[in-house]
Image 1: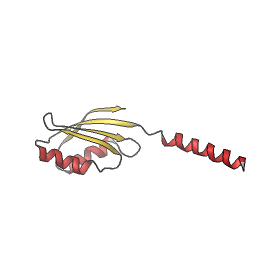
Image 2: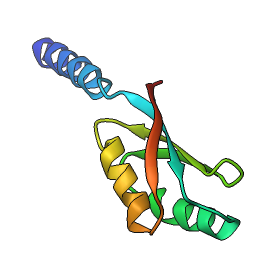
Image 3: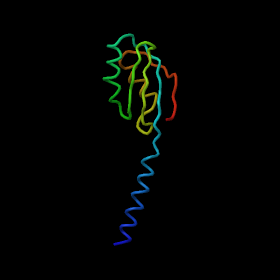
Image 4: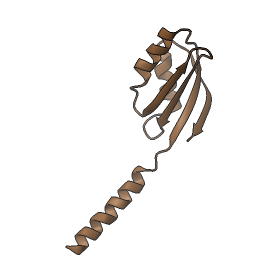
Length: 97
């Protein structure tokens, strides 16, 4: 019984460590959004992309900032999600958090 408990605990620790290997990243896109409705459209659609943890739009400087889990998505997919809505999207910054 002790062996099973020890093995279970070891397996749990190993799986927990493996699950924590994903890297949270922050990407900033320069976009062609021009108004609050454009920003709302981006938020309502891109926020639900797989791996997106936080999304903020800034109409004044036409930018979209996304915090995402790099195990689940990447900047190409996120940029394409913005482009699919009819807006341009070019990576300005991409950093690990």
